[in-house]
Amino acid sequence: MSRPGDQVPGEIGAVRTLRVLTYLSKRSRPVSAGTIARDCDIPRSSLYRILRVMERMYFVVHLPEDELWGIGIGAFEIGSGYLRSGVLERSGRPLLVRLTRRTGMVSHLGVLHGSDVLYLLKQTTDEPARPFVTAVGVRLPAHLTAMGRAMLAQLPAHQVRAILWRPGELVTRTGRGPRHLSELREILRADRSRGYSVESSSTTEEVSCVAAAVFDHEGLPIAAVGVSYYDLPSAAEVERIASAVRETADGLTTRLSGTPVRRRA
Image 1 (cartoon, rainbow, N blue to C red):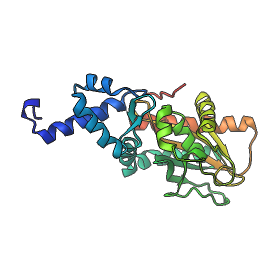
Image 2: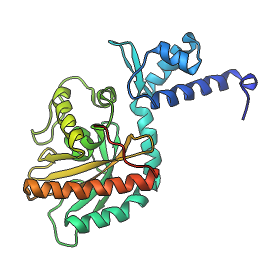
Image 3: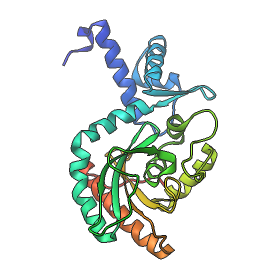
């Protein structure tokens, strides 16, 4: 490893960029440029150049109203890319098999990919079932799906805004689901409070889903586990399904990170 005095200018810039990225990834909320410069020991003039480049590459997000900087979706997608390399699928497949056997329902595993959920695994039942749109490789808007909401509910508000912000209303598929970020925030608050997400007919008419987030060692959501069904169960049955889904998600968290689950309250 080279010492600071041995580094060439390009290497110094790379080290500083990675230092900023690591620093922001560990912050629970956006911080000012002055705080970043102080804590990362980077001159303010150099820091602003770094931040502007990182912003163009979506590794950081700038909140101009508050003059704050936070981690961006580009950094999140790199982490998801590592999981999509096969680690997540190999670890999650046997757990989905058990979840489907336990609930008698189709189960899924997915990750955030930009503002969408990317479905990585699907475990079907032994019984003939009506088709679902959630095939492996399919992408659906995260704010409409239980799996997407389960992950979004565990992210800081500024990161949710960075992921989903667009002019006008949020997209819909069936005419149901949140149309504005303010409406979505209320849904995410309720999901976060109970520890799982429920969605009904937002992606496909008459199809419902229950999902829970999977976490990394830092307590950030890296994936979600969910089950889908056509028949609308009773409230007690939803609780039973949710319990099985959460246990599966927690089991995958332990497999991947080796640490206890830390959900945001």
